[in-house]
Length: 111
Length: 350
Image (tube, rainbow over all chains, first blue to last red; front, top):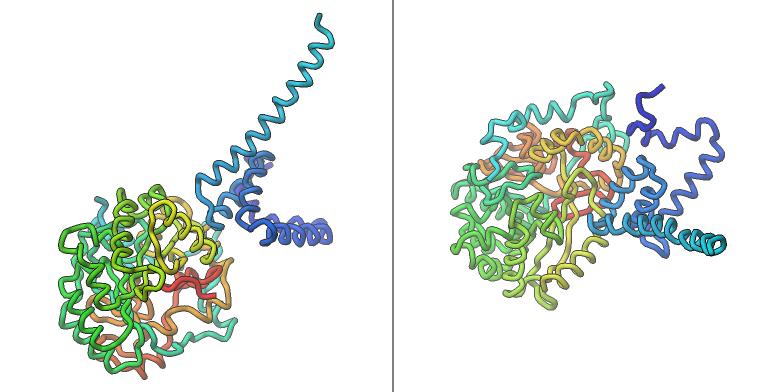
């Protein structure tokens, strides 16, 4: 067993997932590549979205990868932190908005 | 102020040690593929010059700044300065050559006492003159305040480093207060007509990453720089060149100290771009050191890798035909010029 669950060296082995299922991996990586290409959103905007999502799904590989990628796409430290705050706001908001459900229930059962 | 690697007797001041690092096995025991092998695969080895277009002269390593990434290891403590006699040898060579552009670099080239004389003499030869001005020199001392007017008189093409449009990243790389002084200098250049619409006085900026990552797309960065510098500071410029940091000298030291060396080299190797390889700047450039020795590029110069022994070694023996027939000297740092969109003193190449 590895000493830790996450090994930074494993990030560059991402492509190896094709070893156990080449067809699905090929479809995934082809899709992945297309998703991040310049489109209606710029590649830089997509990288910032990926960075924010990486923090939401708390994937250390993705955080490393999209921190570097965001810098290499020309994002500033401020833009990157703002993107993470967007993720944090949605995450926090998602908890808080359930407060309405809690309040509904309270009002249902409390005199 | 920080000292140069040389002044502090750092082991990387020895270029042989730098080359040793660049060619050593990784921690896993594997070896990065040889750059020469990559070119062999593209039928580009041995790499030959296409023609001589740019004559780049390093007039000295003395500088008023000590930038953390400097490949020259320049600074106030560097005393290597080109003499007027060597400059005269350069002028004789330029006059007899097909060179279109003379690219003057340093250090801060303006700190060479014969800098202005050299520019005036090149101007008489009717060649384009580039000066790689670090900007802060213009405001460093009263005697330099008239540099923008001097550049204008000789229609000098000014190329200046400004790693970012924010003080945080610029100062982290180039020293405390450099961003503020750079903005002051840019405004002085703008005031005499540099970078202005309708003016033929060209002011280009150079972006290089403030760390162990590759530059963003040049065109996108240029738009962003233009927008931010105009809105934030009222500054105009013409073009932005995105340049990759090569793993030598102080940037190599940074990579090793920050434990980023292998990852960065791996990034450069993985991003090898055949189109950039065909367009590397050493194919149309000759680099002259402060002491008149000849090199394929400014990076080879700082690694003390002189031009192939089959070609003249010193500017006093300049021979364009023989130089055009030389094999360009390559090593592992060359991956820096072929990664991604490619990199040269004039920005991306692919």
